[in-house]
Amino acid sequence: MPLPRPAPGTAKWWVVGAVGIALGVAMSIYWGLHATVGLPTWQTVSYKVIDDRSVRVDFEVTNPGGTALTCTVQALAQDFSTVGTVRVAVPASGNERSEHRVTLRTTSRAVTGEVRTCE
Image (cartoon, rainbow, N blue to C red):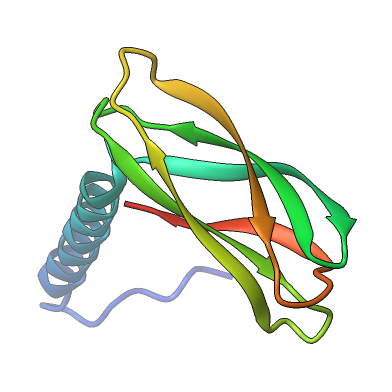
């Protein structure tokens, strides 16, 4: 059984549509990569609840630009409410990757600690 063929005179529109879709996908990929390349990234490595009023957070920052950053670290309670926040200065460095440790004071017992953002 032969495959169906497009109606006469419509093949060029199928080609135009396919090329347009391919260009749209390529532009989306380019803009997505362009918006994120060179920006700092961060990752919470570990945390330890020390007692009812403090938690320690270890985190890693990758900063391709090498500029000074300020990271916001927070402690969360069991109901996901914020019970402690601290801003940590990450100095400019020739190293792209750096490790940091901070101890947060909390208003009540935390169950986790995390880096919220670095700017």
